[in-house]
Length: 356
Image 1 (tube, one colour):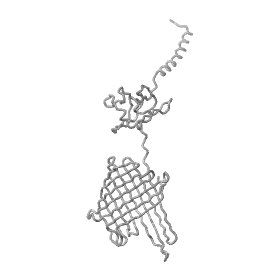
Image 2: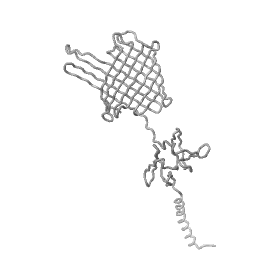
Image 3: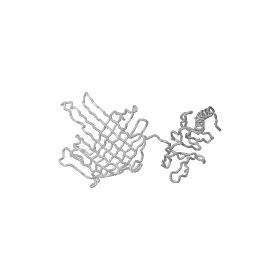
Image 4: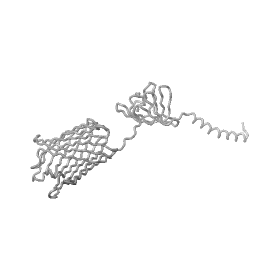
């Protein structure tokens, strides 16, 4: 049947108008993809799963914003795109999550067997954890000044610096101490040096396991009053980090070291192989008050009664977030000191510092 030209034209216009409407209706009928959380009271929440930590899931929706849901209220959940899930046993996967028929569980599709694997909600530790910040150097610098004028005239300065960097696999530490003091004779006016020394230390730890590590370290010391031209110690060994936290740290170490000593009033120097044993301990005594202590023992491998021992104890008190005052005691004992000098050497440092 041949339709009039006018009718054919009207049908073409109708078809052109209906097609967009039909497409719009089909799209509108399709569900909008979103993450979904099914609660135990049968409520369903949709949006975007942001994070999960400390037993709480954060879901962001356009209507309600960020909603925090305790895991105890969740029956199951799903995601429309891969999310990163960390479990208590150390398992980590980045995959799309599906709702599970079994309460308090969720499922993922195994890439190997193409079958669903069930996991307990209670085993989740983290979801989409924030990226770990890039390790940075931290440390502190302190200095002290003492000056007396009257019956006695004395002047002394001291300074200390500590720098450290901790990553997931290693730890680097650098430190230095310095002090110089003079006293004026009231009768002659002559100034006499009462202390003139400095020391520096560098240490590198590599963690083979969470607590077990190997280390390399070195020390360099000079002390004009003790006639010590230089003491150089280079060591290596292994250590165990018993405790590592913001409030307390404790580690022990055992290794070997090469110890070299040269005294100003001796022509010959002394170089020997020694064992090396020590520990480091620090703890918060109260809020803002910290105690730090370390000790290292170097007995000669040829004669254990010939040894060098060094220890440092420090109390540090913060009076602002970054500013602090500290009192440090440095103890040294050398069974073979310079001729005419004692084996025991104790140094005291008080200062005010800034941490960063």
